[in-house]
Length: 299
Image 1 (cartoon, rainbow, N blue to C red):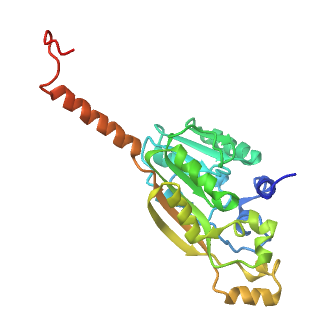
Image 2: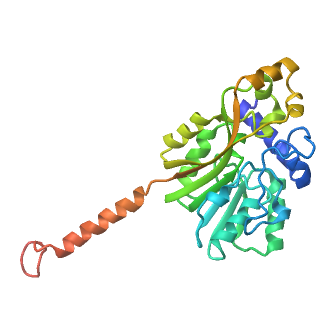
C-alpha cells in the first residue's frame, strides 16, 4: 500500500503531466495550471517577458515569482533549477551564466522533461540539460552547484525538510539559492487542505511561513533573507468549488494569508575555511627556523 506522501506525489506527477500538454494561456488562468478555470485572472504567475533569455515556448505560467531575477547568477556558474518544467527558468539562468556555465533542470514529470529538451534543442543550447528525477533525491553529485533556483515547487513536495537538506548537499560551500514558493500565515479550511486539485495547484501543500524559514535554518543555511513577498488572493469562484457560502465567509474573515515569497539563503564556506587553514600552516612550516637541515641529525 502506498503512503500518503507517495499518493500526493502521484497526484502532482499526473496533474503536471497533463499541464505539459496544455497551453500557457490556460495555465495562466488557473491555480498553478491545475485548478478550476478562473477566466482571464492570472492568480500567481508573474511575467518573465522582460527578462533576458525568456522563451515563450518554455513559459507555462506555473510560477509564483521570479527567482532567477534575484539569484545573482554570474558568468560561468553552475545553476540547478528544481522542478524545471518546460525550461523557462533554466533558459533565463543560461542568459546569466553564459556559454561558459552550466544549467541543469530537474523534474520528475516525463512529459515536462521531454518538452524542455525539445525547447533546448530549438535554442541550440549545449550547456543546458534536463534530468528526470525526484528533488528529494537529486540526480547530481555533492557540492556541484553555485546557485539553485526553484519557482513554486517546494510547496508541492510532502517532505520539504528532505528537499532543503538535498539543496544543502548539492550546493558548493559559499553557494546560495533563491527560491520562490507559496507559504501561509494562518490555517486553511479543511476542505482546501484535503482537495487534490488545490494540492497540485500549489495551495494546500503550503506550510506556515515561520516553519518554512525554520527548516532552512535547521538545514545549516545562513544569510536567510525574504527577497520579495506578495499576498495571493484566490478568486471566490475558485474557493466556492470547495467551500460553502458560510465556510467561505468564515475563511475570508479569518485573516489567513496566502503569500508568494522569494527566499535567499547561503551555504557556509566551511570547506573553504579548512583549505585556508592548511595553507597558513604550510607557510608557517616553510618559514620556520626549526626545520631540519641536511646533516643536522634531527630527522
